[in-house]
Image 1 (tube, rainbow, N blue to C red):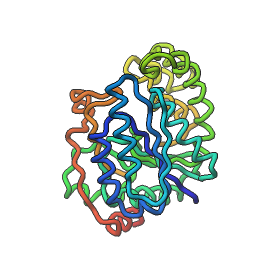
Image 2: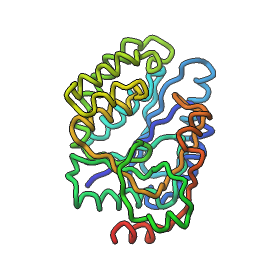
Image 3: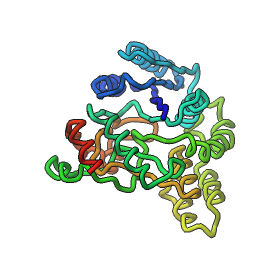
Length: 288
């Protein structure tokens, strides 16, 4: 299976610097091409930060790096869509999606690939994605006993998706962008200008009123983000989101597109520790 890595990047070089420093220590990272997709600025201050992000990505020590940049801010939905489209159209079978405000364990990549390989014994590649992030407050000793566990996932932080899953998601994410983001392309931040109520009504139409997920995707607490669009399509098409029970990445971005410190804490991210395990240790547990 030919696999590539895509990382979405914006104007937070302080997080990106820490993220890339940890990514450089990930075992096997140099074996896979990396595409950095850097969104454009929305004002002069943001332009300076985006330039610094570009510098950091350009200097990342890796033999196969490509970079997409934008002159103007279009939002994360466009980043996710474009980075995946570029790689799938280039012929890759699967894409590992990363973000710029996460710290990666040295075993993160091998944990993800091994967990995915194990899950393929039970799932078709068209019916499953795999992540290595879990909102857990477990101590290291508890995690040691759960290294081999794979559970239902809820986030999209560091995950692998097969081209057959993308083929189901892509048409709807494309419509989401054209319908709810593109009309505001002349705004400083088009993604933030979307109409949340209209988006969720559209989500409801995707699953249908008879669906058991209708009330979930139209609820006030359900987001209108591109992640929510992907989740809605996955629910509609019965695609399972999986993750390792033990987290091998840690979310460090306390400020972001939709993140503030209070929400970061509320979501449980502050309580998560990144405990380090060896690749053989993790692989043996997952394959047991």
